Image (cartoon, rainbow over all chains, first blue to last red; front, side):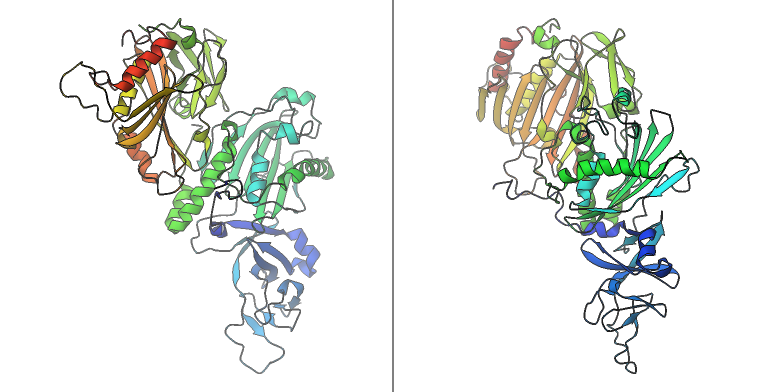
Amino acid sequence: MNVMLNPRSLVEDRTYLRHFWHPVCTLAELEAAGPDGAGPIGAKLLGEPLVIVKLDGRMRAMRDRCAHRFAKLSGGKIVENRLQCPYHGWQYNADGRCGKIPAAPSDAIPRKAFVPSYECEVKYDIVWVRLDSSWDATTIPHCGAWDNDEYKKVIVAQPYNWASSAERRWENFTDFSHFAYVHPGTLYDPAYSEPAIVPMDRVDGELRFFMEPGKDMLDTLPPDSPLGSWTYRAAMPFTVNLDIRLYKNDQPFLLWTTSSPIDDENCRNFMIIAHTDPDMPDSTPLDFQKLVLAEDQPVIETQPGDLSLEEVSLPTDKVSNQYRKWLRELAMGAMEGREGFRKALLTNTYESV
Amino acid sequence: MTTFADGIVENAWYPLGSPVDIRRHGIEHTRLMGRQIDLEVHRTWISPSVDGQALPVTERLGLVWTTLGRPNGPPQQLIEYYEVDRTTVNVSSAPVGLAGPKVLEGAVGLLDGSGQSDGAGSRQVAVGGLGIDRDEHGALRIVSDRANLGTLGAELACEARIVTPYSAVFAFRHPSRPPGQEHRQDLFAIFCQPLEAGLTVVHRLAAIVDLPAGEVDRIRSGRPIAQGDAPPPFETDAIRAYRTWIDGISPGALGTG
């Protein structure tokens, strides 16, 4: 068999991802989409079209298909505290059940006239959805910037889409050895192409590790580069809370990112930046991140979405190797059911202590 | 007695232990070829030194490695270890009262299966089912169809590759492996850390494709494999080949245990 033509997938079945919370949009996007920040707005998560809308004072996530002729409800509007389909005006209640059919107002509403709804929460000014809550084994990932007085500015960036799987984007964000090649002079000095092989812990569903780039790079990198000691708390499967202690002023700086899996080949990325300088315009850190992303995106989008077992790994790929092993264990654990999944996710292991 | 003055021996990389064990147990010192090695643990690496002089260091195969000499290259390569669908197990690190080359001699004995003799003691026994040659790098290669790797399996088809008098890699197929992926081998490796003449820490690791979770504990809890196993009391083809090979690269290395 030619393994390059028929590469084995790291994970054959991605349905385990439905048991995690994923972000789908920001509150700012909802504000832009409809009056009172209530939406509706369309999103796509793991191939599933969703409509996000605020009804009865709570954010809701439903399948974005009217039960009647499958038109997208996200193109509709809120009428009488119901979500109204733009095609024939069917109106859906907060629980997803149809409450009004204008074309047959006297008839009983069919029991099948509903759209599936999913668990939906707002945290960090971002809307989160969990497609399958039957095992209730996961929580919304930690963000160290929120409710933290140490930070004077917390910026929820505009989400951006990449033609890349969420797994690839996660690996890109945590990959030490690409800095010297993709970000020379931006994030890293090319002289530091061989990264340290760091201890990695699994704690409460997070992959935790620490990285300490060379301090002498301060002389060669731009002042906006967040060079410092980097503490990673990476909540599986797609979130990274990167807590930086800047070398230049010993102040904290936080980069938080989550990739949301639109489907197998596309992701939507959410970023929060937090820092301690109240006078710094938001455009300064945002523009620097745009520069970094513009360096990454054209490279990462050349990769196939699927992670393959045929890819050659090195000792210095430890972070992505450990990440891949855990993804695989989660997928295999989920095949065993709730307990297998919980055990794979929540069994702690330590290398650092 | 093994001489540490041997250039091949001095200029090699040696493991000092698992970084996890060093951190977890707060290990601050170890020994290598009669010298005290001080270990300083940082958050991202472990720094060995001797008499205040920092030593080269690298982390490979789940072990911290250093050298007292000037090696030509990195520690032994085993790229398969990093394949994502392998379970890697630091089986154990334990001291034995033997020199590294003698440890390997015992390990070579595993290739002869149970090593049963007819009670004749020291007479030479030719054991069938072995293939012996050297690869393009001069490493000794011994192929057996009846190796006994303890908790990793018995009566196994196995290929041993011995690159230095202090390390050996055994490639085999673990009995737990389901059908498929026939071209891939599971791995068991022995890396010796010579503390003093006649005293060695044997670091043993395994890298097994799709190992069932429960097997890890079983492998660790079983009788240690190739940890100071005495070679059989007769000279088999494998042991004779090993002795010939080692005499060629490091004469006298097997002089005493």
